[in-house]
Length: 267
Image (tube, rainbow, N blue to C red; front, top):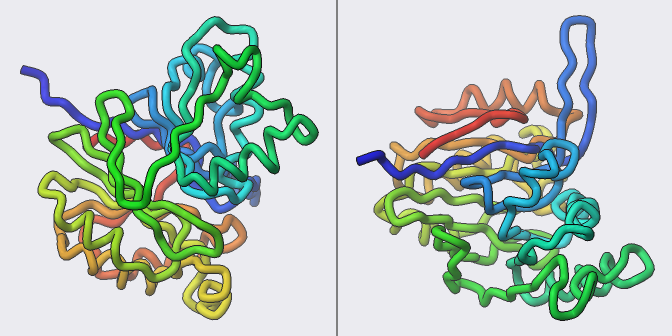
């Protein structure tokens, strides 16, 4: 029997869009979006610039951690791709406050059309599913638990489980506890995706903006209590990518990887 795996495709993994160029190389940093098993998107910072139209039309759920633009900026163009297609609506899953913000600030008929009502109220591009903090919902074959984390605005981290393998995604966060405690109790936990936005020397900026440094990432990872779990650092601010990569490489985490665009991971 073929082993069931969770497949994660990294569409974007940085804290903003940026093209890094020097004499030797170029690296296109893109805002965060992880495609899971081809049908579930974790955040929507990058969508149409990477996924073909056919790939976009396979999407069924988008898990939105919070309302900051670098995590939702792919949603409007995703809606445009869907507009003339007779497909099932895509369900956006998040906190009620986040969904309300999408309606009030983005899909409000002024910044962008209301794709919660178009092409018709009975068959819109997007349906909204509010999740209570700590509740678990089904997204196809995956079970998703959204747990609030410590950021400037209401934000969820996600535990995503297919029954045999599970991962935890921090979302944007500063020091937090509930998410890591919950993840540590998941017997099948295989991987932890944890943000690291600013270098250690910018700890004060990280504290004020509610983000992590490499040193803080290490402290958060230890809260899981599972050193065998693979760790993946993401949401690096492109301007500090080289410094962050060096600092992350010094951490005493046996299986730590700095994510890159285009990477594919199975757990």
